[in-house]
Image (cartoon, rainbow, N blue to C red; front, side, top):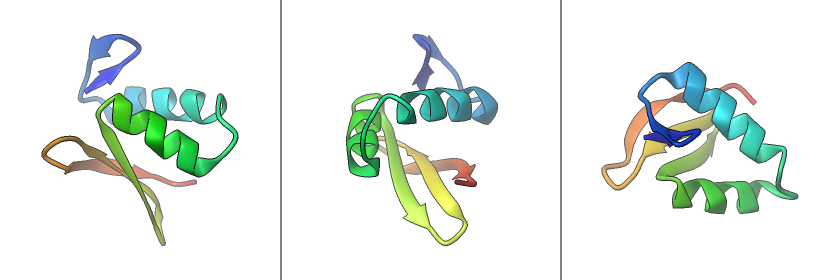
Length: 65
């Protein structure tokens, strides 16, 4: 998906993008809403935040936060 205006599948780049965007918002729900606009579905699990690509909802990885 897109991170920093370029198409990428590299989870390291995606993680950096997601965490920078998380710093810009006030709540986790606002962050999840914004990321859906970029094509990412974020879901809280017991291991962290699962990152999936929309619209297929294909899991890319997990953020340990």
